[in-house]
Every structure is written in structure tokens, then in C-alpha cells.
Length: 551
Image (cartoon, rainbow, N blue to C red):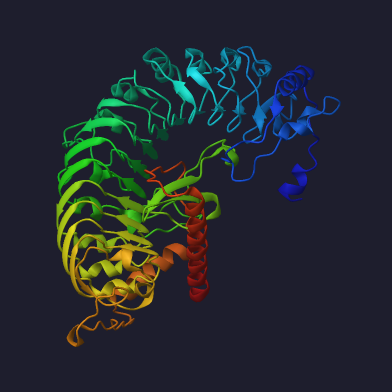
């Protein structure tokens, strides 16, 4: 008998009467309200409409019961169109067996976080994100000491140093902490180093964090995702020596590092720290004050961006294997899978659940990097997005950049690059976005493949460029000619394609588990969504075609 058929024979448990009563009281205190802004991508619906006190509460939508005891152990009411105030002693605090509580993206009318939640001693997952809670986060939110995941993001909440100290001291099993846009101005950045060593995901963007960056945070060696963007952190990225307890590979599992829009400064060339993040898929250091040439050693160590392979039978600890991050005991619906990125001045949102591709990104834009573009970038065959705009890079573009075969977006605008645009870049047949504007390029614009689709904006401000799509025509001796491609067994581009196809053919799965947030600069979200959906469809279709051709 199959597992699915045998599990269907397990009888539905009978709900504990006290739990039924608590749920009905909660439902009666709420109204159903159509949200003004759809944060749920059209999935919001009134789950509590199915609740009828004459029926078994274990059959109600959003309710999960323990098969043995009938106690309610899970309440998933995210995006349920609930509206109303939550009392400090809300009836939900009577669900003593509750392990998972998701009230995200409802409207609780600026209620405080109920003090009664302190009685939910079995709670392991609490998600109150985007639900109009306000006020100070009470210390009691840290009393359920079994918490594995806590999400208070996108509310009008404030953490004082005392409450945050209780959180770091009491939640020893915490793996996921999301406080996006929660005010923690009163919290010293050094307090972050007291978080649980089991922490995997730390998201603190736009939290008004101020002060020196705590280098000890790299002792949290299980981190997979770190977002400290849009704060006021300052200082160098730390440099460690071999005798330090913080040795190389300090964060061997880190896949996403976002330090966007802070006050970091200095060079990266000698930082052993960033050279040690061997699992990185996304790194965003944009909008800081980093200087000096781009860190060649760092790019050389990005193994995941060189070739990405996934297979369920592979060893996730292998040197060149990217595997899906596991969230033990997590409900997939509660697992964040939205990535936001900025491509050619448009905010994009990518739903990681709907994509079967490996997403990789490097964004070092809006700093003060200088010198030449390093040749080592050509080794990053699986890189999808590269943004080095608004720096002071000089010299010609290395023709080897054409070997980044998977590249979808390339932004080198607002630098001091010069010389001719290498015709080898036309080999990048997945390239959807190109911005070379505000540089000193000269001569004819290459033709062929994706280069035939770019408009004037891609080249604006390069006064000595000529050829389509610009109105400045080239002389007879400057007419561009498409590059000749030879795909033989000894060809470098052929070898690159083998690496890329090898990764995508194996069914690459995204290693991103949380969110990636970058600055939105004013374009309409409806347009961004429309462009993004087309971008997803086109990219997924091309990856499918590659798989079809190679099978």
C-alpha cells in the first residue's frame, strides 16, 4: 500500500472542545475586510468562513490538530482578510498545544502584541508579519522558549534593548528571525552577537540599526541568510588572521549577504572574510563607500556561481553542490520565497516557488570601486545578474566577459570604462538587460543575438559610439561585424555551455530561502510586475529549451 493511500486511512482526530470554543471566540471578534493593498498576490480569502461550531474544528481551513490528542497544534491564517483588534488576553492564548501560529497579512488595527501569547509554551513558529501590530514588542514574546522561527516584519513595532536582550537570551533554539522595518534604534548592534548559534536566517533591513558593524556576527556559523540593509551601520568588513578563532570559511553555509545602503567603507582586497563565503549565491554591497579595485580573490572563490549542480542523491556538503536549504518542520506556505531585485531601474519580484532555476547575483553598485574589471568575472558561468554601476571603473571591458553564458542582466553604467565594446558580449544569448550608459566607449556597437534588441538607453552618454540603435552612423571602416563562433570540443565557450547546461539539466533548485530587498526608485509596481512576469516566463522557457536539446 502506498504512503499516500495509507495516510488517507488515518481518521481525522476529534477536536478538543476548549480549543473549538477558543477558535469560535476569536472568529467572532473579527470581521472580514477586503484589503486595500494586495500583499498576498490574489490568494487572500476568508478562511474562517468555513468554521462552524457544530463541526469538528480539525476539519476547518487553517487548523491542524494532533492526531493523538485532538489538540490544535497549528493555526495558519495568513492572508485571511481578518480585521479587528486583538485583546491582550485573546482567546488564542488558550490553545495550549499550539506549535505554529501564522496571522500574517491581516489587519489587527494597530493592536499590541497580545501578552497572552506568553502562555503558548509549545510555540515553535510565530508569524505576525504585515498585520498592523503597533507599539513596543513586549518581553513576553520571548517566553515561548521553543521558538524556532519568529517573524514580526512590516509592522509599526519597536524593540527596546531590554526586550531584545530577553530575545537573545531566552530563544536558544531560534533559527529564523525576521524583523524587517521593526524599529530597533535602542538596540546596540553588538547585541546581535548574542543571538542563538543555531540561527540560519537573520533579516533586519530598515531597522534603524546604528553604530559599528559587529564583526563577531560571523561567529554565527550556521547563517544561510543575512540582511542588514537600509541601516546606519559603519566600519570596515573585518579582516581576520589565521590565529584568530574566526578562521577561513567562517560562514560556510551563507548563501545570501545583503549589506545594501549602510555606511561601510574601505577596501575589500585583503578581507579574508568575504573570501570565505564559499556558498554565496547573492551578495549585495551596494550603496556604501567601499573603495579600491574590485576584490579578485573574492570572485575567484564563488564556487556556486561557477557551476551549480543539484540532485537529490548528491551530498549537500560537496565542494560544488548547491542544495535546497532545509527548514525542518516548516510549513512551505510559511517559508519566505520572494526575492526583490533592481534591474535597469525597475523593482522586480521573483517568486522562488515558481522557478526551477539557480538565482545568483552580485551587486556592488554605488560605491567608489576603481581600477579595471577583473578577468576572473568570466569564470562565473552561472551568474545571472551583475551590477557594478555608479563606481569609478576604468579601462576596456575584458572580452572574456562574454563567457558568462547564463548572464541575464549586466549594468556597468556610470563608470569611466572606455575602448570598444567587445563583440564577444554578443555570445550572451540570455542577456535581457544591458546598461553601458555614461561611460567612454568608442566605435561601433556590436550586432547579433540580444544586442539587436537593446535601445538607446543602453548606450546613452557614450558620445563616441556609433551604429544601431543610435542615430550616430559609423564610417565605412567602422561597420561592426558579428563575431564568428566556433563550438568545437576545444572551444572555451563550448566548455562554458557544458557547465551551465550541466547545472540546469540536473534541475537546479534555488538556494534562496528568504527575501532579497533592494532600493526601489520610483517606478510603478504594476509595470515592474508586468516586466518581471515576462522575464520569468522567457527565462524559464529558455532553460526548458536547453534541457530539451540536451536530453
